[in-house]
Length: 476
Image (cartoon, rainbow, N blue to C red; front, top):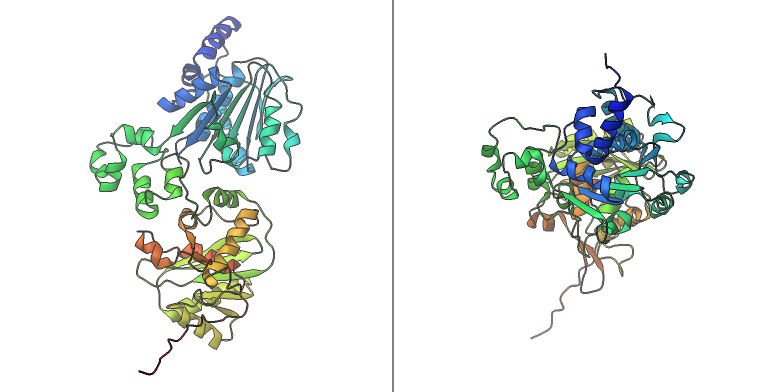
């Protein structure tokens, strides 16, 4: 049973804890912070604003939770507000860490702890809630001498919310911690890294203990030498691992926007030829739209050994991968398409009919299935603007991402494929989207999942083959 400490000891402990946050986290919570996490919590102590661009799996929600508890219990009275773009991030991740740390503390912390609220007194409490773009008023009325606002997954929070946050950070001791994956240099989170007076941190996977302990570098990942460097168990197996990074290096490539953001903790250097920017894709992952009509399947048929056939189900603006399979024969793929249509209630099966997909489509039509022949090389409906159907379909999908009218799952392979697709304006002034073969020439895998997504949302009107101009033959 945990024994309460005396008021005198508590006052001395608070005095030390206010000056040494990592000591309090270790002594009271019993938690270990690695070097950069210690720097972050110390920054919150002395700096009004701290921003952290973090790779995947660096423990950003862990340090946010420990910082929230340190600030709350060592500043009386105080208010701690935590927010994030989605309820899952607030309740299921950040406040899960807070509840876990509170319950496991080496000394009894006290307070009334709920799912996403911790109350110590009338003017001494912490609260977590989502920050939807349409509800900045939720931040109104929070004023206290000591106030800390933590924004998790900060790149996904709207400008309206940040303006509301500014309204509560008016006291001398107010603090703001923004932390998240760096997906875009625009918006408040991205702009903070260009603003003087804000303490900035970049956390790369190569900065984390599982890499620094064994001195594993990006060159080791590229050459494969990292495997021989691991001579003992990983010190922090719950953080990002060399195995995870090596796989992403191979699948995404070091120049991929997703690799730059999720592995290096750097804002992607996306060129003007990027079809769908990473921050649009991440917004679609965070979206929580209602499924609707139409219900249609996009089927991308594998053409080569390492490729996969993908069935993607679209319900209105909501899209989810239904199933994936290694390359199989056309009859098997047709049978799986029929089964998927029956199970999902889809009204259309949109089949990539280039290559092996032509046989799949033919078989589906023979069986009177509601299949559509999707030929990416055929002429676009708006041939003045687009080089072919592929460009027209992809541009329509891009516009959905731009408008925020799409909800996709957090599938790393699909996200990476979407972020890697490029486009250009050809000599006739038409939009031309990079082909699968061109992506493979850049050392990238076939964008099977991304293409299935595109097919599911593609508008298929009359199919018109591109007309080739015959060469004139004159008399000699």
